[in-house]
Image 1 (cartoon, rainbow, N blue to C red):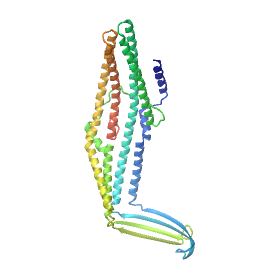
Image 2 (image 1 turned 30 degrees about the horizontal axis):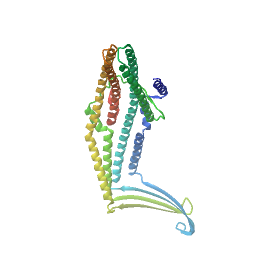
Image 3 (image 1 turned 180 degrees about the vertical axis):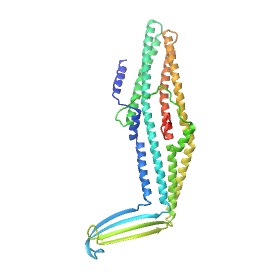
Image 4 (image 1 turned 90 degrees about the horizontal axis):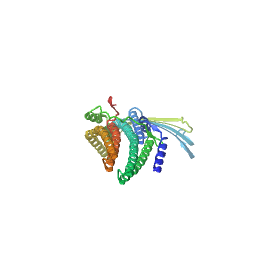
Length: 428
C-alpha cells in the first residue's frame, strides 16, 4: 500500500513544474508551428507571385543582358577593328514581348487568379484545422485531468468502503468475502489511478509538442459546468454558408477554374503567335565595348501546324484534368448538405448528451449514497454496493467526455463553415 502511494506523490510533485498554457495561447503558438499551416501560408505567397507574373506579361518585356570576353591563339580577325586581335569583347541586350498568344496570356491570368483564391481558401482551412487539432490536444489534457479526479474519488471511496467492510467483518456483521471483494476493488482503483496518470502525462506531452515545447504542457481550466449554448443559426443556414464560403468548396471551385483556364491555354496553341523582339549589341577589344554597336527590331509571327501530336496530347490531358476537377467540385457540392448537417447534428447531439450525462451523474451519486447507507446497516449485499460504485464511476467519466465532445463538435463545424462561431453574433 505504501509503494503506490509514493508513486502517486512523486507524479503529483513532478506535475507541479509543468508549464500551464491557456487555450488562446495554445492556439496562437500552434498556428506558427503546424507544418500544414506553414505550407498553406507558403502556397499563398507562391500564388501571389504567380499572379504578379501573369499581370506583368501584358506590359513588361522579358529582358536578358549578356557579356563575354574571348581570347584567341593565334590572333583572329576582329569584325569591330577589322584587323587581327587576340581579344574580343561583346555585350548584348535582348528584350521581347508577346503581342498575341492566342489568348494564352489571358488564360494564364485567369488561372493565376483562381490559384490565388484557392491558396487563400487552403490557408484558411489549414488555420482552422490547426485550431481544431490544438483544441483536441488541449481538451484531451483537460479530459485526462478530470478522469484523474474521477479515479482519485474512486480510490477514496474504495478505501472508505474497505475500512467499513473490515469493521463489519471484525464485528461479525459481514462475511470475510466482503472485505476480500473490497480489497480487490481498492487494488483496482489504485491501478486505474496510475493508468490515468500515465494517460495524463501522454496528453500533456502531446500538447507540449503541439505548441513547440520540448516537454509537457498543462492546460488551464475552462468553464465546463454548464451546457453549451445552441447554435445561433439553423442547419439550412449552415449549409448555405458552407457552400458559399467553406474552404473545401472554395478550393474545389478554384481548382476547376484553374483547370478550365489551362484547357483554354492549350487551345490557344493552335492560333498564330506574334512576338516583338529588340536586340542590341556592342563589340570591342576592351570592356565596356563601344567601338561598334548594332541593334535590331523584329516582329515575328508564327503559326504552328504540326508538332507530332504533342499539342493534342497536352490538350487531351488538360481536358481530362478539367473534367476530373469539375466532377470533384460537383461531388463535394452534392455532399455538402450531408456533411454540414451531420456536423450540425453532432453538435446538437453532444449538447443533449451532456444534459443526459449530467442527470445520470446525479442519479448515480444518489444511488451510491443509498447503497452505502444500506450496506452499513446490513440491508444489502456487497455486490449491490460495488455495482452502484461502478455505475457512478462510469457516469462521471461519461460526463467528462460529453463536456469536451461538444467543444470538438463545434470546432469541426467551424472548419466546414470557414469561420469561427460566436454564439452572441453567429459565425464570424
